[in-house]
Image (cartoon, rainbow, N blue to C red; front, top):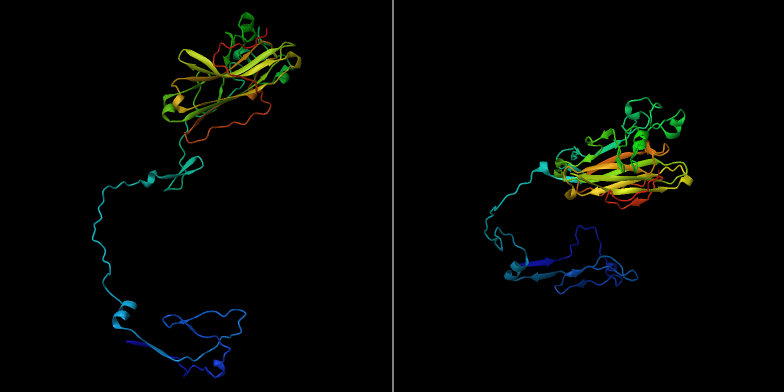
Length: 352
């Protein structure tokens, strides 16, 4: 078998003259198999591109070499595949209805367009209104404002000075005069729980405090407790202590776990301290039936010292384990004085 290479000249329309074969054209290069190799002229070469007549050549292959060199068609595999059988050992199917991907702090189902948000039945927000039993203007709700027998009289014009939503707080001592001055509301010394009466949302409070339930613990959620408490502090020219705290009650024991406050100088009165109290409780530290209250304590029973209800709130957030810890912004004009008090036996300033 043979292959012949020739240069056809008929019917091409090309007239290869002696001039085409001048020395101005580059030489033909071949490889070791006598194949013509194409290459590009350098930019600074004095040679030209064109046509060149070359003698035809014949290459003769031995049949064995040809068959080995030229690809052959075949219906047989040169290397046959091994014979093996697939065997299913175990199948674990994934239910698409239980497949989700995260979008922020929520879960989006793989199938479906609706966001699936875990239902929160444990978070709550609570406020203090004039309907609370601690309100100073209604003598416990039994007498009209300004008609408080033996108690703090809010005289005409004082409503503007003191505000329409002011409340009694705990007092550091107790006697008959203290009981009378608070219309029977303060009957024992020390910290007194704030009587949150307005539930914005969330579970109802018990004894004006947030109760840890079995359902909350089983939900796996953590708790973030936050309270903001505002005071007006003035007792003539006397120095007055004013404090706010988070109180924890368990069975028959109680103790303050966060306390903020200080003694305010009478020379600069009145003072308007604002305290923010926060406390995080991981789920594994929650105790069933524990009660968390927000309490206050003043060192005076003077009319000029009280809780400002419009500056108070109590907020409990039940967080999923994967949610980041809440970092509350500092309220404007917050009084940052704090005490690391874990026992209600801690000494606080009292002024009579």
